[in-house]
Image (tube, rainbow, N blue to C red):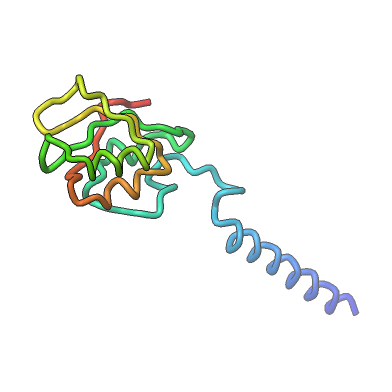
Length: 123
């Protein structure tokens, strides 16, 4: 009888550990350190400097590189829908300093006019 109880106890412990590691999606028990671990999209358009920023950030201050620095109404409307704020006074070649919500990062890089997103901040 004692052997059966021990086996049932071990199976119960195994099931509990299995549930913890498979259904927690690593967000409840483990701290996700950076943005790269939290986003669902991966692209060469996102620089490591952006992906390595802390995951607690809601907004990223970063440069967006565009195919053409003269932005038409279509791209401006798309950026406004994504709540991305451009600093028109900080244009450097084809890069514009911007404030990007982390939640909009994946949608931003899907825009064909966007070439690259990078930052100089190390928050």
